[in-house]
Image 1: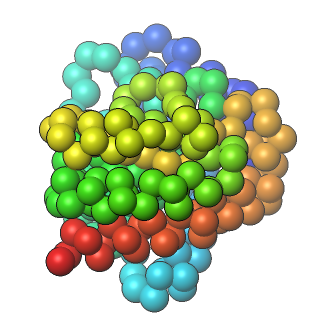
Image 2 (image 1 turned 90 degrees about the vertical axis):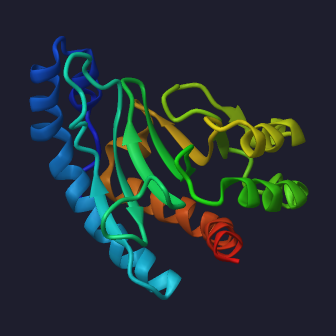
Amino acid sequence: MKGFSQKDFDTFLIDGLEARMTAIQERIQPKFQAIGNELVDDLSAHLGNEVYLHIAKHARRTVNPPNDTWLAIADNKRGYKKHPHFQVGLFDDHLFIWLALIYELDGKEKIAASYLKDINQLKQLPEDFVVSLDHMKKDSISIGDLAEKHFIRFRDVKKAEFLIGRHLQSDDKRTKNGELLMETIKDTFHTLIPLYQQAMQVRNQ
C-alpha cells in the first residue's frame, strides 16, 4: 500500500481543469482504489453489512479545477451524498479522514438533534480529532471547541454540514507511509463507527 507523496499534493497547484483532472486520475485515483478496496473489506466486517466504494469523478465541472478530491464509502451502491459516509481525500496541504454528513443528507435534522443530545460524549473523542462544517473549505475546529451552536446550525441551516475525523498534514510521516496511513485511517473510522451507526439508526426511525 502506497502513501501520498508531495507530488500528489502538488496536483492541486496544476492550472487548468483538464491538466489537473488528468493528474488526479493518474497520480491519486489508483491509490484511492487500493486504499478504498481494503477499507471496504474492513468496514463491511466491522459494520456487519456491505458497503461500497465511490471515487469522486468531478464530472459536473466544466471550468474550475477541483481544489480537493476524495474517496467515499457508503452503504449505498449508487451514491453516497444522501447517506452518512466515510471519506479519505486530499487538499494541497493536508489529507482528511472523515465521517461525513453533508448537506444532501436525508434525515439531517433528526441526526443533528441526536448528536446535540450526546455532545458531551462526542467531546470525549481523541483530542487530535477535528470537525469541519463545510466540506468545500480547508479549515476545521478542534474537538475541544465543539459547541452546541455547531449542531444547532447543522440542524437548522439547509446547507450546513458536519464532518468529523482527522487531518494529516502533507509532510506527516503517516501520510507518506502506506502502512501507517492505513492504520491511522482504520483507527479513525473504527473510533467513528458508533457515530455512523447512530446516524443510520436515527435516520431510519
